[in-house]
Amino acid sequence: MLVVLCPQPDGSVSVRDVDRAQAGLPVVAEQTVSLDDLAGLVREREAECTPEGTSPDASLRWVWADTATTYRALLDAGVRVTRCWDLRLCRAILRASALTARTGYATAPRSAWDEAPTAATAAPDRLFDLAPPVTLDPLAELRDQHRALDAAVGLDGRPESARLWLLLAAESAGALIAAEMTVAGVPWDVVEHDRILTDLLGPRPALGYRPALLEAKAAQVSAALGVEVNLDSPVELLRSMRSAGLPATSTRSWELQQIDHPAIAPLLEYKKMSRLMTANGWHWLDTWVADGRFRPVYVPGGVVTGRWASDGGGALQLPHQIRSAVRSDPGWSLVVADAAQLEPRILAAMSGDAAMAEAGRAADMYEGMVATGAVETRQQAKFGMLGAMYGGTQGESGRMLPRITRAFPQALALVEAAARAGEQGEVVSTWLGRSSPLPSAEWRSAHSAASAEGGSAAEQEAVRTQARSWGRFTRNFVVQGTAAEWALCWMSLLRLRLRALSEGLTDGPHLAFFLHDEIMVHTPTGLADEVATLVQETAHEAGRLLFEGSPVEFRLTTAVVTAYSDAK
DNA sequence: TATTCGAGCCAC
DNA sequence: AAACGTGGCTCGAATA
Image (cartoon, rainbow, N blue to C red; front, top):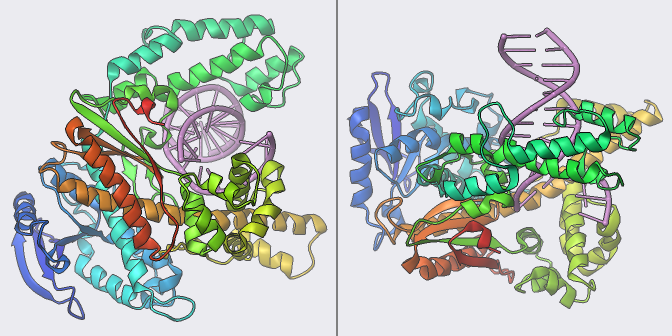
């Protein structure tokens, strides 16, 4: 059953049951509740359908415009749901997908549904932002989406609704998970974090002052350069280095490393310290950590490829330096699992390349590639694959490419085709049907102008450079995007299995962190081994869900630890 | 004074 | 090893 929440102009909510088994998605029951009573109703309806013994058709799927707003409010009221359909996220996928490109849904002009929702933080106490969206009709939008979904076809004209449905369900599940993880938070040891900062920077200074060790390091650099310099200003630093006779053309660390001068070592150390201070220092701690939890805001679908982005807190760039501050509660553990060589395995599975799939059965896929005889060392396999997936042409990557191409022709053909399509301004799609955006209007006009003869050689070369750049994007899009789909399925399956182990959100094992191909579960230590097994099983199931019949195994490196820094 | 922009470094 | 994909974040510099 689909249950659609339709906010009404008077502030109430019309709750409409829709039978998804019937054509046209008819409403079979309807009731209207006040906003105050909605959380209670959702709780009751969820409780009615117990997880065990219910057929999937009997399960509930809540349909709403925006999970970040509505589910956040439900969670704050202590209510969890099992499944949802996020109309905005699904819309974004369906409107852009090549599988639905010829439907009226995709070709219709933009509407208010395509506008970004207002920030959930602006009205955290409200289930819906009733200002403009009340004019939107969630039921009509749901029906439009299902019509488009039913009409989805591949290039060969065969129906493709099933895989696109899986993508939309996984995307929506991701939105639930993102909201739940923000509420649960990453367990954070503030004392340990402060110890790291104090060790590396000196004790926390008074407002407006730099910590002692950072100050001392800056003084060392100035002394070595023979001039007082503001190290935080790249312009001033470069000028000072050059007048001191250093052959620097920028202030990038990797370039400075090549230079032999007494100022370089302390300068590189200063940069490292300064970065820690500004990005994850005491100010960050004050802003983002409360009650022993780091609560970042995740943005599902925030990246074109389908990866998540984050909004504040820098959750997806948590430096290794401070990971020892991620520490489980007393009596609890962290189960940290990282998908091993995820993107190469994804490429092997989606291309159906037999030799690469064989390598993809190994615990370490790069070693598996060495075993096929294609390359001699793990390092060669790794750089060769990175080059294939990113479009690298230089260095070890470029050197390995011919051998990788010979050994795994089908896999390379897939990424090459994606690159060629991009170079010509065409759309490419992931395994489940998320499609790449078109290049910008400037890109396209420059491209067509260049192909229509005329234009200087320099102009034509500039256009070719642009084309190759977009080709590298589309090349990577198909692999990165499909990897993101696998990760969403993995996490969604795991979430459902974990739910069976506890009532509330945080009284038992729960997802605490997600980083593209890595998940963290915070769990009572007594359940850690069971959780680790579930993590493994769901990784395998996600592989079967996407690539039924493929021999590729999706292996994990799993660790049960107290501190994040002890994983891998 | 407020806003964008670019450099640089962090993550995968 | 080096410039080859996706992002966020922070700062100073440039712009309005």
